[in-house]
Image 1 (spheres, helix red, strand yellow):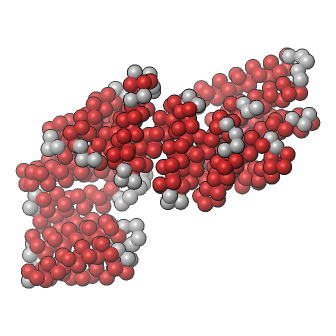
Image 2 (tube, one colour):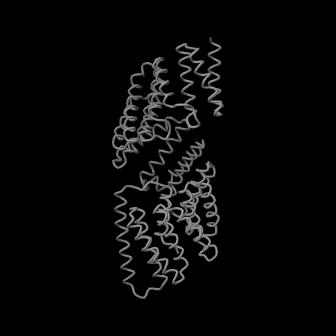
Image 3 (cartoon, rainbow, N blue to C red):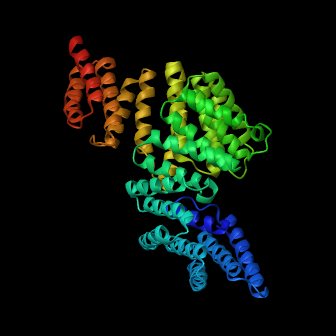
Length: 496
C-alpha cells in the first residue's frame, strides 16, 4: 500500500517541474526541521525494534526515504538531496533483495523524484519509462496510473504539453480500474486540465477540473475540492459562461462548512472574490460593488498578506468609479496604494489607476481632468518603481499604457493637442505593429486619427496616418482592426 510521504514527494517534484511557488522561506525551514526530527524518530524505531518482518522493515525504510525527499524538496540543499538519494537506494536494495514489489516501485518513484528535484528531468523520465514497462509486465498494477501521471507532469516541466496530455490521458484510463484514492485520480484530472489549457483546449480543461473537484469532495478533501471548484468557476468566466460561474460559486459558498465559517478564511474570500468578478462580468454592478467593498474592508486586516488587499482594494476602486462614486473610489485606491507600498503589485495597481482616471474623465469631462491626471501621476510613480525593481509586465510596458491613457483622458476633457502628443508617445513606445501588439497599435492609431482628423480638423494628416497604417494591419491579417481604420478614413474623406 502507498504511504502518504511517498505521494507527497512525487507531487512536490512535479511542482518543481512546473516551477510553482516554493512558499515562504521561514515556513519551509520550520517544516524541514520537523521532517528531520521525523526521520530521526523513524530511524530510532527501525533500529530499536527487533523481529521486524521484511514487509514491515520495507515500510519503515520507505518512510525514512520519503521524509528526507520531502526535506530536500523544501530546502533544495545539495546535502539534503544526497542524503535523500542514499536513503532511496537503501530502500531499493532492501526491497529488491526481499522481492517486495510495492516497495521496489515506491523506491523507483522516489528516485525519479530526486532526479527531478535536482533539475534533471530527462533522467527522471528515463527512470519512469523503464518503470512503467516493468509495472505493465510484473505489477503492482495500481502503481501504473501514478507513474504515468508523474511522467506527464515531468513532460509539462519540459514544456511538452502534447506529450504530457498523452501520458496523463493514459494515466486517467488506467486509474479507472482502481478506486480513486488508490490512483489519486483527482490529481490526474487536475494535471490533465493544465495540459489542456496549454494546448488551447479550455472546454476540455473545464471538464477535467470539475471531475477533479468532484472526486476530492467524495474523498473528504474539501479544501482541495473547493480550490479546484474556484479554478473551474474562473475558467467558466473566462469562457464567457457568466451564469454557470455564478451558479457554481453560489453552490460552493452554500456548503455548510463554508457558510459556518469553518473553512480557511482566505479560501472563502477567494471564492467570494471570484463571485464578485462574475457578478461584475454579468453587469450586476450593484451586487458586485457591495461584495467588493466588504472584501476590501475584511482584507485590510490581512497583515500577513498586504498584496492581496492591494489587489482587492484596487478592483473595488474601479467598480466604485464605474458607479460614479469617486469619493469612495479615492479612499479605496488610497488603501490599495498603501498596501502596495508594503507588497508591490505594480501591474494591477497601474491598471486600476489608469482605469479610474479614464472613468473620471469620461464621466466628468474637463471637471474631472485634475483628479484624473492625479491618478495618472500615481500610475507614473508605480511605473517608475516597477522599472527600478526590474519588473517586467505581462503585456505592454506600463509607460506605453500610461501614455495611451493620457491621450484618452485628455481627449475626453477636450484637451486635444495634449491628447495627440500623448498618443504619439504611446505609438512610439509600441513600435512597429506585430503579432503581439497589433490590436493595441491599431486602437492607438485609430484614436490618434479621431483626435487629429475630427477634433483638430487636420484631415490630411489624419488620412496620411490611416493610409499608412491600414496596409500594415492588413498584411498581419487583422481584418477587424483594418475595417475600423477604413471606416474612419472613409468618414474623414466624406467630410472633406
